[in-house]
Amino acid sequence: MHFFQYHNGRLFCEETDIAAIAQRVGTPFYLYSQRTLLRHCEHIHRAFGTLEHLTCYSVKANSNLALLHILAQEGIGADVVSGGELFRALKAGFPSEKIVYSGVGKTELEIEYALREEILLFNVESVPELETIDRIAGQMGQVAPVALRINPDIDPHTHPYIATGLQENKFGIPYSQARESFKIASEMKNLKVIGTDAHIGSQITTLEPFLESAERLAELVQTLGNEHIDIKYIDIGGGLGIRYEDETPPEPSEWAGAIAPVLAKTGCKIIFEPGRSLVGNAGILVTQVLYVKQTPRKLFVIVDAGMNDLIRPSLYGSHHQIKPVIESDSAKVQVDVVGPICESADFLATERLMPLANPGELLAVMSAGAYGFSMSSNYNSRPRCPEILVNASRFRVIRERETYQDLVRGESIEGDWISV
Ligand code: LLP
Image 1 (cartoon, protein in one colour):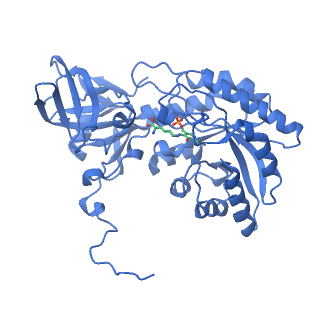
Image 2 (cartoon, protein in one colour):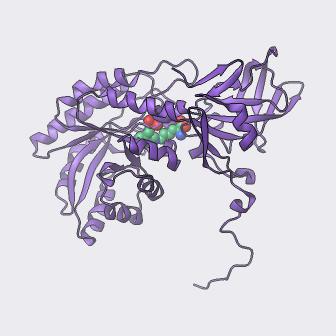
Image 3 (cartoon, rainbow, N blue to C red):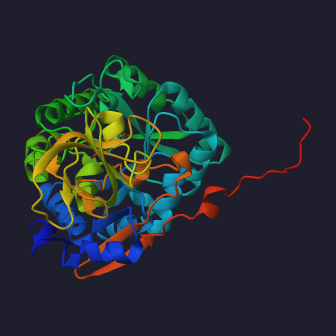
C-alpha cells in the first residue's frame, strides 16, 4: 500500500488532501506520512527475525524531533554523527544505551558529551581518535566502549559522493591496518573494545556489496577472536537504497536474508544504521509554480522551492519524480523545473517530460523524506520551509516555517570589539 495516492484526481497523503494542507500552511513545505514511517519500521523489525539486533536510525537522513520521537517509540535506536544529533536524539527520547556515535571527526567536546550520556558505543575511525577518546575517558574516570570502523575497500556502485568504503575515501581504518589497530585499542587503559563496523555507502541497490562487507567483518571478528579480542557487536552500517525512479533495491527482508547467515555465525549482536530506507519514501516536498518561461532553448517551470530546500538534484544529479498535486489533462512537454535561487544548478529536474504546470499549480517532489530538509539551508536568505506530519486524515506542523527574524538571529551590527 502506497500512502501517496490520487483520489478523484487529487493527490492525498494517507487520507489527507495535500492541496488543502497547502492552502493552510502555504508553500513550499515538506510533508511526511506517519503510516509509511511505521510500515518501514515494521519491515525492518521483521527483516532480522529472531537474530539479535539493534536498528540505529541514521539521524542525518531526517532529524526532525517528531519523526525521531516516533522511531524511538518503535524501539529503534539512533546513529548520530555530531553533538547536535546526539542532543536531538536524547531530546526525542532515544535511550542512551541505544545510541551509537559515528563520524570521522569527533571533537573533544563531543566525545565528552557522549561519554557523559553513556551511549552504547563510539564507532572509531582512526588510531589518533582512539587516543583522544582514551585520554578523555581517563580524565573523566570512565571506560569508553568502542567499535572500530573498517574500510573494507568495496565498490558500492553508487554516486561517488556517497561511496564511503573505497580505499580513496576518508572513512574507516583500512582493512590492512585493522588487526594492528584493534591490538592498539585493546591495550588502551580507558577503552573497552566491543565492536567492529563498516558503512560502505548510500543508495546501494544490489546485495553483493553488503554481502562482501558482511563477509569481511565476520572474517575479521574470527581473526580477532583467535587473538583474544572478543567482539560483541558487528555494525553493518546503513546504505540500503530506495526507489526514486525505476531502481529495484532489495527489500529489507531480502537484504537481511542475505547477510544474516554470514553474521549469525559470529554470534555477535548485529547493529544496522538505516537512514534513507526508513524515511526517504515517507516524505515529499510540495511546491507551487510561480512562472512558466519559454526561451529559445528551453521551457522553464519556475517554482517556489529551490536548491536550498532540496539540494539532491543539484549536488548529485539525483532524480526525484515530480507529480501534479491536482491531476491535469495538459499535454506532456519537456521542461526544466527550477527554483528561485541565483545559481544555474538550482533545479529540481532537467529535461523532464511532464504535463505542463501553470502558475499557481502545486507540484509534489516525491521521495524527499531523506536528506531533504536535513540538507536544506538559508541560501539567498530564504527562510527554511515548514515540515508537516500526516496521520490518517489529520496533519500537524512539526517544524514551523522560519521567519525573517529567524534569519538574522545571532547577528549583530554593533557588537563589542574584543582585544586578544
Ligand atoms: N551510517 C553511516 C556511518 C553513514 O555515514 C550513513 C550515511 C548512514 C549510516 C545512513 O545511510 P543510508 O541508510 O541513509 O544510506 N546526502 C546523501 C546521502 C549521504 C549519506 C551519508 N551517510 C544523499 O542525499 O543521497
